[in-house]
Image (cartoon, rainbow, N blue to C red; front, top):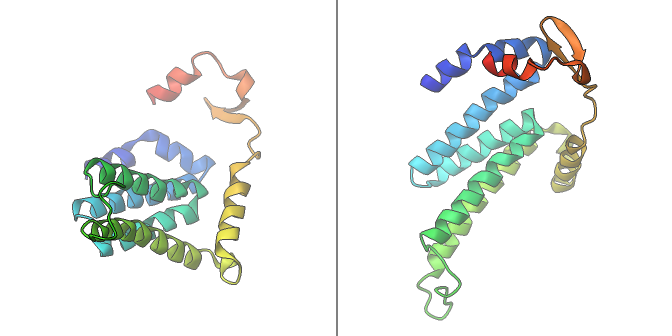
Length: 178
C-alpha cells in the first residue's frame, strides 16, 4: 500500500502524463512484474506463481521492450541462490547414483516454467508474431528498440521546451527536488 501511495503522490508521475503516456503504462506493468517476483519467491517457487510471474513479465515486455529485464533478473537470481544454497553442483551430480539429479531437474524446470509462460503470453500479446518465427521476431523487436534515435534532445523545463545544451545549471537540482 505504501508503494502505491508513493507512486501516486509523486509529482513527476503526473508531469510525465502530458509528455509520454507510454511510461505510465510501463510503470504499472513494472509494478505487476515486481509483484510477480514477490509472489513467486514468497510462495517457495511454486509452478502456478512461476507461470503468473512469467505472464506478468510478458505483459511488461509488451508495453516496453525493456521489460525483458524481469525474467533475466529473476532467473539470474534463482541461479545464484541455487548455486549458493548448493541445490546442485557439478561435483554432486552423479547419473549413476541419481541422488542429486532430481534437484537439478527441479531447478531447470523452474527456469523453464518462467521462460515458457513468458514467451507464450508475449506471443499472445503480440499478434504480429502469431504466424512467424517467435524467437526471430523477438530478436528483431529487441534489436529495433535497442537503437532508438527519435529523441531530439529536448526537454520541458519551467514551461519551455529547451534543447539539452540550453539547460540551466540548476536543472538537475530542480528535477531531483520535485
